[in-house]
Length: 418
Ligand code: AMP
Ligand code: GLY
Image (cartoon, rainbow, N blue to C red; front, side, top):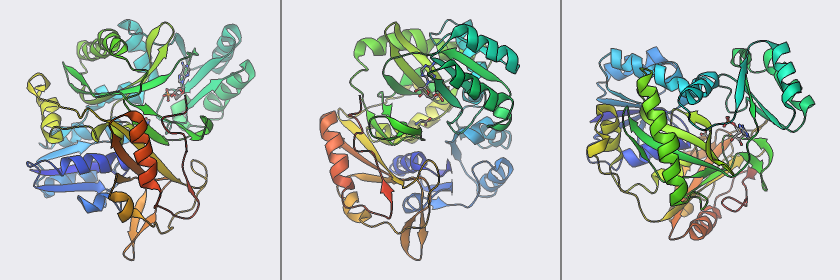
């Protein structure tokens, strides 16, 4: 089969790396791809959000299957557009991808179907939002409704902080139209875990749980990032918690979306908080998480293309999905200054040596004059396995040792920050 993967980050490198191992994949393409993806796929220079351009290229080049990995093209309806052009695609259609694209929608869905989540209210009027914050008190959480690159959430410790956040989103339009509607919700406590799951519209098959590290610095300090590292599986996600999540969250969510006429086919991301009252949903995403994907797919022992096709065909019930008994750790090496300002174009040393003991997924790299150079905030995701989580973490840090580039930054406490 001729397969195209849409996207350009570490997540897409992991997906391409795994698809390249499938005997059914004859030709693999990635648009736009990056310097590392180019080692396993032919990169095509089309922006991930260019729906018309992507459909036209996929048609002209006779793609048999397209995997849409990032949130933006999913929210724009790229899967619908590909299907309309007769090209089978993996990922939720626009009407199901809305569980990520609109927090107001997903909160309403959870409320209607009694899926455990933080109490909340939705506002389009600033004064009403301010009055609600005043009445509820702090701590309290203020969220922009739409996609805001993971930055539209403020966990406010004081009423003043919450009011400022609401003003910035609703009046100053800090996140553009994403903030015209805000969701204000109860602050939950407890460890956070991610569960990625394959879904075929009716059935849901969870992958091993994982855990992201969103803050830039050790000890969960500093600004929020896309994710500085991930482990799988996290010790807090016990078999008992897993059973509750399946019964109270995963199945009810997939059934709710089906009942609403929005069957979800693709990978669904459950962002969960294990609160003293039980597991609750923090957020849904309509795709693999990054860097969770890099850790979790490293543990997959089955053919990823077979699973993707089964999701599309409603055949997940008959598909074998095997996982290694190991644990995994993905350590992100980032540009100095990320997630704020940083420079690009620095040569990266030590990649070959690191690649002998771990898989080095590229997130933001480019090839320049025969050299791999930095080309983004998150640059690499060094991903290693181990018999135990402790061993996997040690292996990832050991493998990353030879890698260097100017102003390189990473956390030293991935998997140990809790
Ligand atoms: P989100 O974009 O919805 O995932 O939110 C980003 C981060 O904010 C989450 O990973 C949590 O750490 C935190 N957060 C979001 N909602 C809540 C909540 N209701 N209570 C406590 N923390 C939250
Ligand atoms: N790692 C968090 C996300 O992909 O949304």
